Image (cartoon, rainbow, N blue to C red; front, side, top):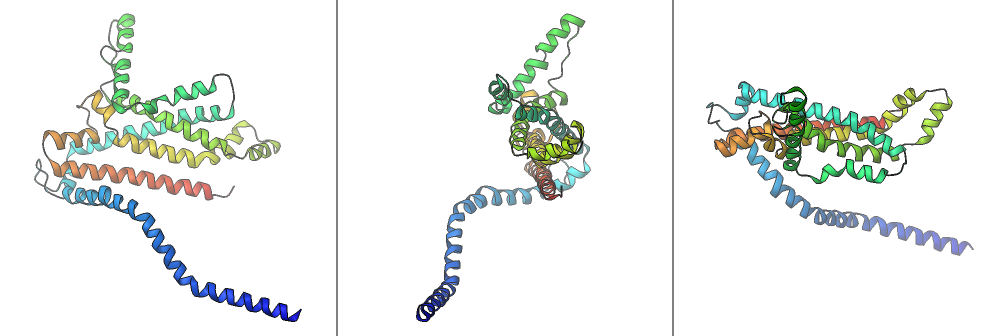
Length: 300
């Protein structure tokens, strides 16, 4: 019996020694495999994002053709660019808050209730995701344009045409139209992962519906609301097709970038505006990611 135990101990020691000896070699092999697996993604990242963006940053530091100073400095000192930046930020922020508010409630209701025709309703509400920005802009024109439904109805009722499609209001409606489906799908998925027992425990302790919603449900889906709100903000900041369809006279960053690049060949200013737009959206997504992580790690 003792001999068997000794052989087992020797075998275990030999196995441990072999693993320890093979440890560094195995680790190096895993590292090489990881590098090989990441090589295509890293190549695509460097070739199609990192190098072009670095060139864009350097180009934005060149002299602006209109002002004779650095394009970055021109953005900070010229009123037209500041107004464009403020308008783009304002519309995107209002769209994000409105979409999260409206679609958040709708998504929670759809996730918690079953009724005939629910699948068809969800499909209709998320159908705008299939439309490109140009089509969304055309739909806004059909609603609030010069020959739109609202204009004809107001002409018949009040003998004047109400038109909003070719302004920031029309842009807001168009951005909200394709932002709502994103929020609905995200909130519905988040609601399905909520722990119902927490709500039942809160109700058993005397909490009413408002307190359950405020203290249990909203904190539970807060990461989803933050992330989808940030995505709506970033999408609205850079959306071009809808704005271009509604009119090129609006002063927003995507149209300014297009105008500086195509109409005036002012590549330095187009590059600087593009960098500013990218940094703002990246910052918004980073803040939302950090806040969502803090919400997940917050104590109950």
